[in-house]
Length: 332
Image (cartoon, rainbow, N blue to C red; front, side, top):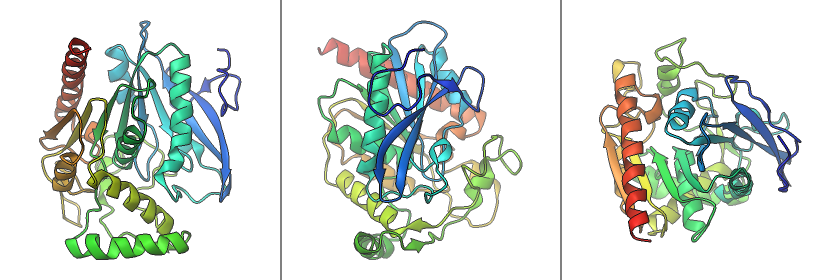
């Protein structure tokens, strides 16, 4: 494959990815930041049939792309599948960096812009952005900041991180204080005291069915910098101030949140990370063609729920695509 002539690509070719099975990867060279050299990684799995449709997936916090099943589901529906391992995550993590350390979610615009340009250069004319958790917050804000773009045409959010899952005093007082401190002390570390059972609920060696690198996706939550808290808080504030999104957007979330700290089977029947009421409520703040959908017994990453549940998730996604873009076509 010839190198796409777009700034940011460091390799002349896609190389085989660690996932194998027709997954390939491309390293994107980004501008240096406050920690030095920065890269991102674009992973691709093309549909076996020629198609002008594609999806770009953005993972969440403490995460990276490993969901082979998701890529195959979109391939089978006629989509070329792409995913980003964002800077300082997974395949893109460099030894001099603190994992997942950013000071503004706008930093991710660089790799998203490059990825979308590459996707377009590879003859994809209809592109959907899809994000999970923090990735859902990222793509929602990206869409709101890039109106009238010809690089993407819809947004899918899987349990987007629109609010910290904390009590009202912590959300209204503590987080704004930490966010302000993050402006002046961005490298100060802080532990977010929530249950670590979610990671164990996913991995095949514990309570889950998924195989992933616990180096790239640790089972226990790492400490975060105050700069990261500020980055999330500022992006969430934009969601709360009625952003306009000019493409169809689907916001999905579980039917319930899980609040236990010790293991129980409830962890595989609800969202153990976010408060689903927050997601539902803040999705209403978005101005545009917004579809909000509750998934019964979905986990935090809905695509990693029990098989009957995730079958419902995929059915919901593809039904929404058919409806949203059929209607849009009729109106243009």
